[in-house]
Amino acid sequence: MTLSLPTTPPTTRAGVVDVDPERWPDVARLPRASSARTAVARRLVERAFARLPLRMASAADAPRVPRPQDGTEAEPTLTLHDPDAFHRRIGADGLLGFGESYMAGEWDADDLVGVLTVLARHVDDLVPAPLRRLRGAWVRRRPAADRNTPEGARRNIHRHYDLSNELFALFLDPGLTYSAAVFDPLPRAGFPLGDGELATAQHRKIDRLLDLAGAGQGTELLEIGTGWGELAIRAAARGARVRTLTLSEEQLGLARRRIADAGAADRVSVELLDYRAARGRYDAVVSVEMIEAVGAEYWSDYFTALRRLLAPGGRVALQAITMPHERMLATARTHTWISKYVFPGGLIPSPEAITRESAMAGLRITHDIGYGDHYAETLRQWRERFLRQEAAVSALGFDHVFRRMWEFYLAYSEAGFRSGYLDVRQLGLTAATTEGTP
Image 1 (cartoon, rainbow, N blue to C red):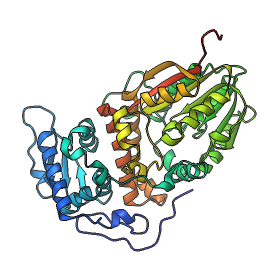
Image 2 (image 1 turned 30 degrees about the vertical axis):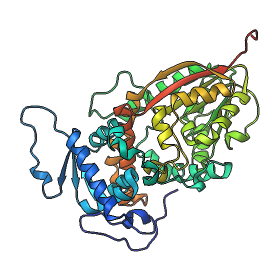
Image 3 (image 1 turned 90 degrees about the vertical axis):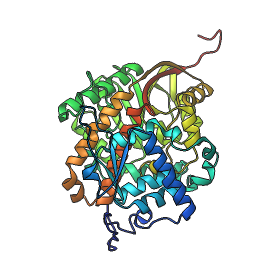
Image 4 (image 1 turned 135 degrees about the horizontal axis):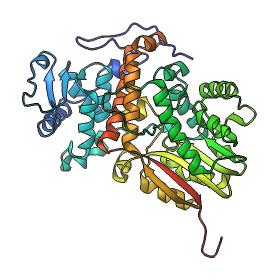
């Protein structure tokens, strides 16, 4: 499947990329923002850049920004091509507007991840404390249509995972594993990995999860969130019988073909089914970076399903991205750039939320280890691979705005892990027992 783009002629402004107004309506047009809000945004941006290890330059001045002569590392520079539009978008929509401004080509950076890492590290300091109380009047609420009802979850998954199998194949490893790898050791900064090396790191991650789940000969294993089938294939190679669930039609078809090609079709079944509709009892339940797509409103349903589907003595193995609890609460109802353009309906949980929701469902966490620096490296590898495939991405029908959006998404995510704002954790869970119960 490739994306079908509208044929409406694109619009353009001086120094800004061509934008198709049907495909990207909120990027093509500047938002309405009062002069007062725009002025406040400009002041906040200038204040932040004066206090943080960042530099800002106009497009004309950027080549003349002096570089350090003492051997120290240069501070990342954000270059404004359209300062008025940049501040207007931030004045209207805050960080959502910041991302849309990048999509529109109104600013660039000599080190995009570097700029975003500094901002992520200081996200709580960007707005003075007195103004933070006005956050509710500044940010947008999440659209009701993005709720992860059974029908809404299907639409939300379709918007990201059904973009194009060919697109994902351009930057993932040959096994098409779309979650954090585990490296041993972490590659040197700037060192690109070949397909085999990245696949090895992904298999190391999968094998640790399967070990955590106790998957082996004769194990009845349920996977919630198939991806493109690599975990199911490796579980079947251990002798497990696997049932794996997805809401992505694109992933369903390719996963079935990959499983058949691996000779595992007799041991793996792939179904287009919501986790809430699953029935049965399983020795092991595995779910990799799927909880982020569930939505806070349905976390109790998710953990209740895990407990209900677990056979006596069974184990759950989860891989989950997490963020600090206060940041989770601050963004839970906010329509962020990520929720608008990349993962509609999604919310990254905090470790506290996972602990609380799993306990309420009758599950006990027995294993918990983080790999945040490994996800930062995984994302770097994906981003650099994606950028090398510009012509191939274009040939699939994705325009320049999409390519900037995807670059920003990968860089934004990498910065989250490099700054410590995000983490990724592998968790083992078992059914909780009451006192006196074996």
